[in-house]
Length: 224
Image 1 (cartoon, rainbow, N blue to C red):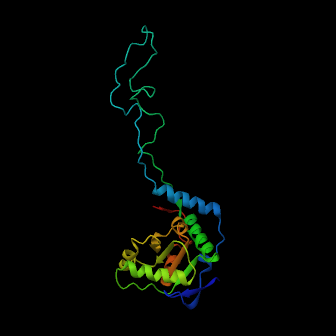
Image 2: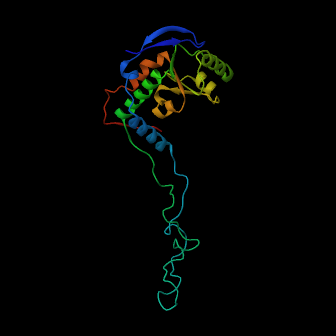
Image 3: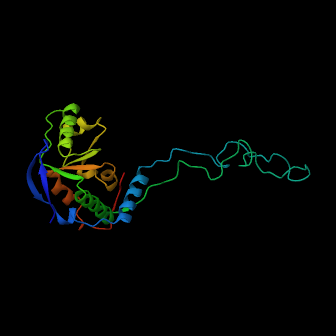
């Protein structure tokens, strides 16, 4: 069973904790993690670019000239893609759907793999608590910066909390280095998008309960 230190917000070790072997001791499978990251990015994608085919462009219902006898090439519409002002061949369409369905068990396994890899590479830390009594970005930033300096953490950080906390979430909203995630919001892509992960201690049992592998594999999960 993996064991790791628990730190307070000052970066001081206060105890050790035994972590779930299912959650933090799973061997990473890069292809599965890659598949989940690609699906996450695809589900975030929205089709903005849009072009019109010859059937969408207004006009062009009348044949420009008769089929034979003019000496010119035959043509059926002035909206032909070969003509200026005509439709576009194989252009992007706003109606295209990029979303991908993700199998629940695969999603949860990949999440476990990322957490296990971060723990083994010393990129994951457990916080005893994250006390934020009021909405103050400056205070939260100062506390996290002090914690990071104490433990030699350089780079952007995900902070995982067990439940919604308005003070923490709004304090971190405009901090570029820190991203606060509720347990229900974590995905392999979000965890990998930052170099380090801080998990508040009371979020650990919630993660294990929320992403239990014993739940039905027939359902699908959206990574939007």
